[in-house]
Amino acid sequence: MGATRLKIIDLESGDQPFVSRDGGAAIAFNGEIYNHLQIRAELETLGHQFRSHCDTETVLHAFLEWDTLCFSRLRGMFAAAIWTESGKRLVLARDRLGIKPLYIARRERDIYFGSELKAILSHPEIERRLCLAGLDCYLATNYVPGPWTLVEGIEKLAPGSWMEWRDGEIRSDSYWRLPRGVYNSWTMDSATQELDRLLRESIREHLLSDVPLGMWLSGGIDSSTILHYASQASGAPLKTFSISFRARSFDETEYIRRVARQYGTEHQELDLSPEKDLQGAIEEFARYSDEPTADAGALPVWFLSKLSKTRTTVSLSGEGADELFGGYLTYRANRLARLVRRLPRKAIEWSLAALRRWPVSDEKISLEYRLKRFLEGCLVAPERAHIYWNGTFSDAEKAAILQLPLPDALRGLLNSLRELLPGEDDLSPYLWFDQKHFLPDDILTKVDRMSMAHSVEVRPPFLDHRIVEFAATLPASFKIRGSRQKVILKELMKDKLPRSILRRKKTGLDIPAHEWLRGPLRDLLMSTLMAGVAEHAGLFRPSTIENLLRLHMERRANLGYQLWGLMTLFLWMKEWRIQTEYSPAAEGWARETARTCT
Image 1 (spheres, rainbow, N blue to C red):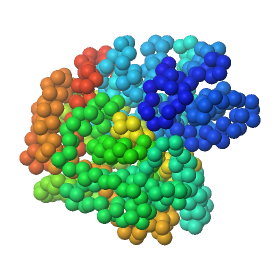
Image 2: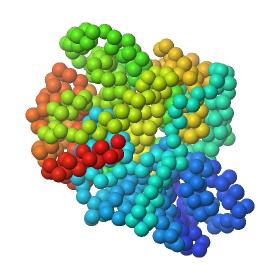
Image 3: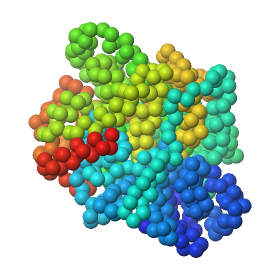
């Protein structure tokens, strides 16, 4: 068991696992525990003696005192591996929301693990074969939901759980589960007061750092809320960083600057334009992403991490607020689709056919793009539509680009969502699904890999588990009311932030993918897809992918996000020499894996 750490904090333990004083236990640890000083004080009253000031040693002592019960006491983000010599026992654990990764592979009675996929791939006994169940999910959703990865036989340890290995035998359990269906009789006043208290406490803890700390700022309500509370808790001006797209039709630069001026931050911004080395950054993704980053937002996060590294090594961010408080447009689409599905199917198909004759626009946020995607989702089941609106290929499109059928791995995940529909309301099942899958396996994965590549630690205060548990008790009307979204957050901040910030439309860090793949990234796209299809022609259908490229380049369709996912997939497969030669036995194995995992 070993550890290699980024130079964020100079721990006394060096680059080796932290070993207990008697040599009977050791820990390899990745992350931050924000309440470790309180836990340490309690352990000292129980007789524990410490020889460092780091939270890694605190976690080891907590485990020696409380065993696996210790994990529910930790507040923070972490992946941990703990070995106890007396019982020849290994325990692996991951934080509640899956902010930090932990991969595992089993070969007969042996176990391999690492906080990066490449740590396991470095072992000569691990085969590098593409996982068909993972590919099924990736092509549909843009990410690979746990437990799968895109490497056959390697899985992710579930957030909020631990696993024990002892003499080849494995057992596991959850120490925390995502809450659902736990409602409280809040008034808006009492709920905003509680959210105010929780945010103050969470952000105060997240600000604790021995190294320079900054903030990622987008000019939206999420990051601006974090900045407001952080400015109140900090005794010095904060450093803030942002990425803008002045070439995009909607420019958020002025919103960002307005918030930075209001709180007197030391602000730096970068205009992400085609003049930057976009191709070089994307090619580096293949090594740092562990799995392909089909979310095109990884590109601005890469440059944002690079920018913030110039002055800080820790940054706060606003991830999680959309999933907790209903910030995505898809949640409103789910409601509207219920009404549209009452129409005759032929009427929806006719409307969609008419829309497809509209001129193609380069913007993802264009009316044309959204309406087409929305109506296509109205033609499938509600649970499928939910992932389709944020995803890429439909079931028919997946089948068209592949030479062999994939196991329907996604069905098991969507069954869990369908069973919750309809629930007590028409919002909480979708929020629960996104917190369980989309948040850890897309949003947090993207931020962690891009930031860690630049030795930047990103902390999301909204994902303190107490805030997550609180959000689950709120009625749907406190999150979405008509066309208003994140209602409670806007109520809380209405006298604190400029009105323009509260009313601005959500844009996020979406790059103009359609345009860039026709322009500055065209050569990279064409060469990568042609080489990838040629090498893996036994799995992918060259004629279909060539047709997708032609439709996109001739502006007959906007397929930038589908092509982005294929491009990053092939770049990753080339970097890690992933194999796709499948026999009937391998296909059967993949189907059985999909069945047992779901």
